[in-house]
Amino acid sequence: MKKEKITYKVSENDKLSVKSKFLLCVCGAIIGFVNGFFGGGGGMICVPLLEKVLHLQNKYSHATAIAVILPISFVSAVIYLLNGNLETVPFLTVGSGVVLGGILGSFLLKFLPSKVIRIIFVFIMLAGGIRLLF
Image (cartoon, rainbow, N blue to C red; front, side, top):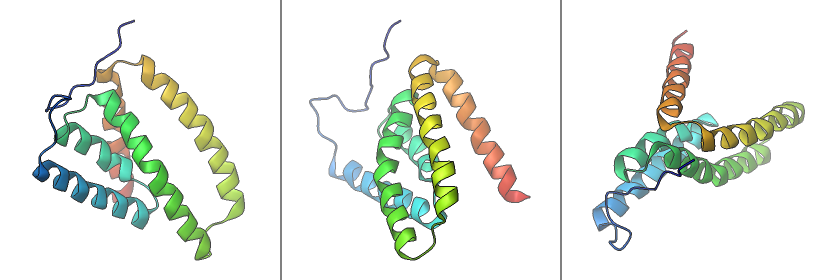
C-alpha cells in the first residue's frame, strides 16, 4: 500500500511567512479557547484550519490535530480538576473508552482513504451541529 506524502503550500526548504505564522498562532488561540471553554471541540476547528492554512492532506491534518489537542486537553483537565469540576467515575470510565477509541481510530486512519475520512468527519460535524440545535 502506498503512503500518501505530506504536501504543504510551501516547500520544505521555504519558511512560512510572518503573516502565515501569525495566522497559525491566532488559529491556535481560537482552537485553545474553544477546547478550554467547551471542554472539547478544538479538533473540529483544527482539522479544517490545518487543511486550509497549511494545505495538509486530510489524514495528516487529523493526526496533527490530535497531537495539538492533547496538551490543550491536559491543561484544561488540570484546571477543571483544580476548580473542583471533575467527577472521578465518569472520568475513569469515559476516559478508558476514549483511550480504546483513540487507539482504534488512529489505527483506522492509517488504512482508510482520505475521502472516507472526510465523509465520516462531515457526518460527525453535522450530527454534532444538529444535536446542539435540539
